[in-house]
Image 1 (spheres, rainbow, N blue to C red):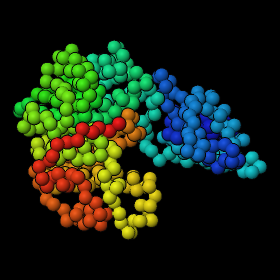
Image 2 (cartoon, rainbow, N blue to C red):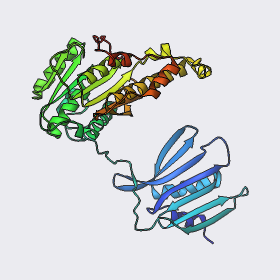
Image 3 (cartoon, helix red, strand yellow):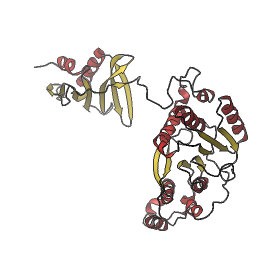
Image 4 (cartoon, helix red, strand yellow):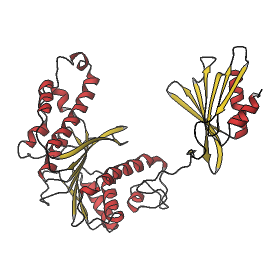
Length: 392
């Protein structure tokens, strides 16, 4: 009969997929511990992930340390161990008196199917690559001159790359044979505006003209200075809002990030008026429908202010997406990482397809909720001037 030491030597090695310690003997420790091999600086370690309620604590062990750790936990902490490996699976059951029952069986995964080992130092394949200096990211404080992403700005680096992934997915909607015009309403410090230009012009070779609009003079001056210093000849920034700008008669893509409340609706209506091929919008501060929404069936839920606010925000963006669909767009609502406003935001992405017709069910929904969205009114008439609002 195998000893526990022999069993662990056979199971805890580079053939291991995962081991799980479960059935804790006391209630003051972790509920379970998962162990898996990881590659760290070219060496194999074993990462133990201990689950304490909603928290997970991680610790890495060498091979010998992992064997000793698991044996100790089976002796004092847990009554069960299950292992899964490429060649063999195993189970250890510990009785109340401490007797261990050990069972093994052949693994279910064929040896020909390699298992991807978790790598702590694995580098994600970003569109803007780590280690490659990008001038605007250096000047905006996201990268060092050597291309290293500054730890405190890593969330911004991830956000920029995620945004570019949204664009990459819809590149077929942008023409290749002529200049592409993009308007970025409420561009702010313009991380994403510079990223769009760099990606489309420098990396993808599009003939692109990008116009950033914002209400802050100092921001516009700084962005124009940076664009000139990089030689971005077709990237320009102007003070103003999307309704007042008359420098173009048609726009291929409209980007509007964090236009507050109904300002998003005015921006979307303007994009439809321009017949924009692509619309990317991250709304915020969706207050309008929160003031309107009412429904007898939903009354028990809507009486809770925070739930009403969240439901109204989701309904607002859902209706916006449907109204864009009626205007001939393929519309999606996607999750967008954005650390400046909320931990997670929703992005409305619409790509023109030429179809579209009014939805009777959408009208029934709005009637049932007693709501009258601004975007619906604007799409039925020529959009009036856009209020100078931006989310904070």
